[in-house]
Each structure stands twice: as structure tokens, then as C-alpha cells.
Amino acid sequence: MAAAPHPPSPIPPSPDPDLQTGLQYVRAGWFDRAEPLFRSALARYGERPDILHFLAVCLSQRGALDDAEQLWRKAIAKDPKEPMLSYNLGLVARRQGRLDEAARRFRETIRRAPNHVDAKLALASLHMDQGRHVAAERELGQLLNEMERAEHEGKPAPQPLLARLRNMLGYALYRCGQPAAALEILEQALADAGEDVARRSQIMGDRALALASLGHHDEALSEASQAADLAPEAAALHHALGFILYNAGRPEEALVPLQRALELDPNFRGGRNTLALAHAALGHTDEAAGLLSEHLQQNPLDRDAVLTLSLLKIRRHAYDEALAVLEPHLKEAPDDVRALNNQGLALRGLKRFEEARRTLKRAQRAASDDPFVLTNLASVLVDLDRAAEARPMHEQALQGLPGDPRLLANYGICLAALGERDRARDVLDASLASDPNNEEALIARAHLET
Image 1 (cartoon, rainbow, N blue to C red):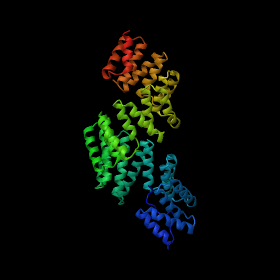
Image 2 (spheres, rainbow, N blue to C red):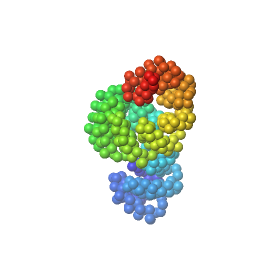
Image 3 (cartoon, rainbow, N blue to C red):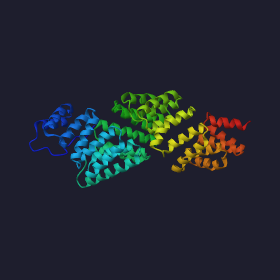
Image 4 (cartoon, one colour):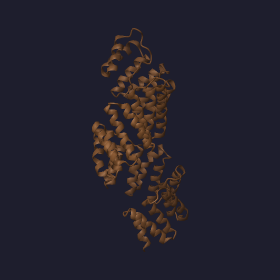
């Protein structure tokens, strides 16, 4: 939705009655009544930037984004220094999925109007949509510092704005892996929110996620449940409850709130991915794959869905299908470590070992201490009869994740290839003690007894 508009160019002292009434309708939110009045004014006065702007606002409110964009482009061509025009062009570009252009427009707005708070919030929100949570945290932290300095100078920001800003910053900190810092900011956001139920429930949902990240699952579930009760039509809060249940090892209980989130908002970002993870944890592989495939038809570059679906395909030995899922994403993000890792696994499954080695080597260059990249690259080296090179990689991986049954299984297989049968037997037994159903460990252990 476009921000509450302000005229890019002043309306003359004695405004046209249509413009005057149209502005009143816009302020009241009656965009359908305002639109014909602005069209009438446009016919009389021509393509004046302020009229183009308000007409574009009306069009965007009824979803005619292409037409609104054309009007804003005409307006900014006539009044290139007006920040509201570049800001609204950023909003429409974002709604149409052109995120790079949206970011450029928001930065352009901030350059022209350094105190344009809405543009700064929009840019930070865009960073979060793109998974750039560190950049979002930086933008939001700077904005909060500016507001706190203004408050010390006797110019306090409105409490609702502070509540929104601290809410966003707390969520960004949580996504940056700083849940304790997130909780501190979110506590302040709750105080700022006052009796605003919608904002309080959102803050409580984000607090619940941070609590769960710290391992306080019971407290997190209580807070998430309260938040969902406060705002029962908010898809994000039902998703948060399901997400926490899934991560608490209760995937069956997670299904109901996750399904409810998608009923409320079928396009909820990440909703199908989390529901698919819960189904996968319950062994419902077909349901999980179906959900993700459906989601990727509409959002082909959704990173989380691509990674989850490709991994499901690999586990089902559908390696060609996994590669097909990964290909569009890797064209857009060729250095994505997790996507390269999955691509390497799929190539290994097809016994294209040299290609797998090169792919995993690229991933290792980008993340030299990632335990899964290390263990998978080392396993491919074993496939290539280079077990001696693989051994230190397996050992380095286990330093990062000691006791992980998957890493232990791979290390045991490497030791067996080196002829260290007794040591391999001990390591494989340790793997099976943690996960008795580890297929690779079971096969390798059986081979040691033949």
C-alpha cells in the first residue's frame, strides 16, 4: 500500500474543487471516489506532477500497478527532485518483484530526503525479504540511533513509529543469530506499543522466536500461543507457533498451526517450506515435495524452498530432479554455499564424481569451515580413491560438529578405505548409536564384516 501521499508540487492557493475534494477522499481512504476527480483535473490541467502522483496512488490502491508506475514515471520526469515520487516508484517496483530497482529507488529517496523515515524502513524491510539481515540490522540500528539523538534534543518520535522500528530491529537481530539482543530490543518495543493489539501481538510472536532460538521452548510456545490468540487472523503468528513446535521436535503438533497460516494467507512467505519440513520429519515425503513444488511454481527463486526440495529429491535418489530444482537458483546466486553443497551431493549421487568435487571445492572456498561441505567434499575424494586427502577434512568437520552421526558415518567409511578397519568399526558404531537408521553407516558396517 502506498504511503499517505503528500503533493510533490504545491497546489495553487485556490485549488480546483475536484482536486480539493479528491485530496479529502484520499485522506479518508476513499480512493475509488478520488480517482475520477483526479482524472477530471488531469484533463483540465494536463500532466502536472502532483495530479499524476495522486492519480497513481488511487490506481495502485486498486491493484493497477503498471498504470500507476507509468504515471509516477511521468511525474518524476517532470519533477526529478521530489522524494515522494522515487519512494512510490520503489514501492511499486517491490510489489512487482523488482527488488533491485526498489532498493535503488529507496536509496535515491533517502539521498534526496535524508530524514525520510518511511524510505529507510522500506529499504531495511527489503533487505530482510532478500535474506540480507545483517544489512537490515545496520540500517535499522542507524535509524534508531538517529531517533534517540533527536529525542535527547527534545524531538521525540511518535511511540507507534518507535514500536515498529524496534520490532523490525529485534526481528533482524534474531535472524542475525543474536536472540539475546533481540529480546532486549523487543522488550522496549512492547513498552512503545502500548495498547496497540496488532503491534503487541507481532512483537510477542518475534519474542517467541527469539526465546525458542535460546532453547526456551516452553516459554516460547506460551508467548506464541498468546500472540496468536490476540490476533487470530494473523498468518505470521500461526506460522511462528508451528515453526517453534517443529524446532522443538514436535512436528505432528506443528501441522495444525502451519496449515492455518496458509489458510489465512496462501502466499505467506516461508509457510509452505516450514510445513514441508514438518511433513518430511514425519516421513510424509510426497506431501513435503508436493508443497514445495507448488510453491516454487509461483516463487521459482525462493531459496529456502529450493534448498529443502532439492535435499528431499536427493534423499529419494532423484538426483536429476534435484539438479533441475537447483539450476535456476544457482544462475542467480552462483556462490550460495548451501545450494552448491546440494548440487555436489546430487552430482555424487549420479556418480559424476569429478564434477561433484569441483562444485564442493567452490563451496569450500566460500565457507572453509562448514562441516557439511567439508564432509561431503571429503566423501567425494574417497570415491575418487583419494582417502588420504579426505581424512583431515573429515576430522576438521567433526571438530565443528562432534558426534554428528552423518559426519561419523562418512569418517568411518574413509577410515575403512584407508584399511583402518578396527578404527572404522568403532566410528561407525558411534554413528549408529546416535542414529540406528543411518543407511550409509549400516551398509559400511556390514561391509566390514564380510
